[in-house]
Length: 367
Image (cartoon, rainbow, N blue to C red):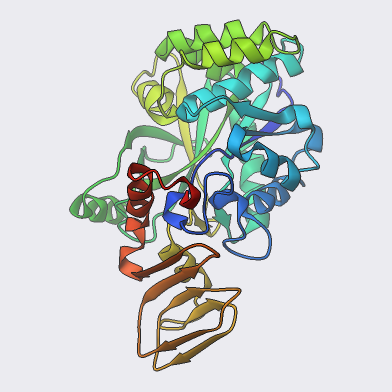
């Protein structure tokens, strides 16, 4: 394989459910398809960040049947054949593998660079982000390189995975020592204090050949199933084979499946992390939305007509109803046509439990 840099493609992962944004986020219209922050949806914002870097013909999106219609409507610029639809969710290793085998066919069996990016994150500094992505693609063009963007931590967060880096060598990126999962608060404080750890934001860069070689090494059955599927791309057999082979794929994240074992196996693969100070947020809850939009501590953040009397620190989303908030503090209030959420901001992470309750009670109309 030539070491010349191949063509770069962006793969947007847009299949998540966003349960912590209920009642706005629903099965057919989840977090990434909503205007959670700003006028445009998170998916539209993701596309706009990438458009200056990649031609339309080099942007792909991986989603599911429930969301496919909305995704296509929001990304009309992307060729319809570049909207890859999973028959059912199998986590990120499978979703990235599906895109990888399509890129094999797109490049007529040649190699390609993959920039794998979530559809539901917020980037406050898009110009700086694009500069880092350009530099990262150059590193990822090296055969055998797996590259991750790492976010310098601003607090001892227990809800994120962390990446431990080695001391900087002569080259620009850091070598990854290990990936660690969501730590305890005590451990997270130690990570932040050490200066050696970065948040894992789920943004990955590599050659198709590098990814598939690692997939074959670490997840051989999934690799074999995807290669069988690759033979049918562009034929009338594709839909049937996709359904059959996808059911055989292991339900596992790319972090667990490839990055963690690869970082422990220096004989085959080099895993790098590049710090990205770009104003990143995964917008993981309504509380995170408040933190992004509040102009000062204790300010109220609202959509629609709201009267706040002796009320501070509230997030109120009610575009259709007038809301009077009297003497309340630090609440999340979200109104839709069929549901109302009220909870303390500090309990915003627990909104996903409401969705689980609705599922158990088979209240499909509220999902």
